[in-house]
Length: 304
Image (cartoon, rainbow, N blue to C red; front, side):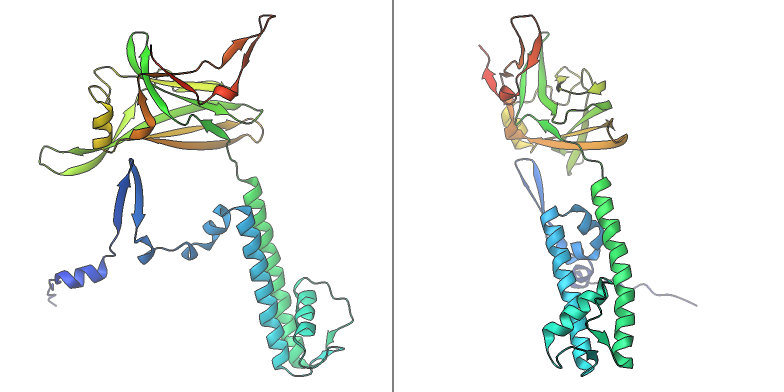
């Protein structure tokens, strides 16, 4: 048996491959046209876990009312099949559906025909499955570990130990500790290969201290810009021209729930300020005790 390969035309290939536009502004990606091949509704479990609580509760309420309305219409289609319910009255059928779906069963209204008992059986099964699904989703949302880490609004390049150093701040907003915290910094920028191809390349930035046994208050991340640094020889103009972006990834173990938590942040080229330094937030009291003033956490000053 022989097979013959057929060459597709340009228009045929365009029909098979969705068109995705990537826009880069201030070093940040904006992907347009992804709805052609992907939608949140194709992954409803992930959608229900990631949307805000207000949207989650609103969506549950809409689904609950919609399901009861559908079953109410099913009861109305059976005619006078519910005892003590006004025939053809939607609200009576709707509230009877609510009692059945939630397994309340007041007894004032009850099915009196085989058709109604069949719908009640189906709705009772749907109610059991719905309660199990909603309980699982609510538990998954509550039990999902999250971190509350505050990053400085900007990063600065300032001398440290005689070496130009990239610096930014991070703070733990909770009154607990993130144990064995690790921080990694990635630099993304446009580069041209030897063959003349434009690519988006990733570089690891080495920090003076990339991990700490206990992250409780603040953390000043510092990357020395020496001859081994991807930032060596770059200027603020070249950062903007190459659409440079810094991506920070922080992870550790939350001591409260003993689970791994993650936090991410990014800085565009415009967020990296040269020849500035952060305002000191560590102060001393009259008794010699140290304290941290977070009111100046984001403040910076130009170098003299």
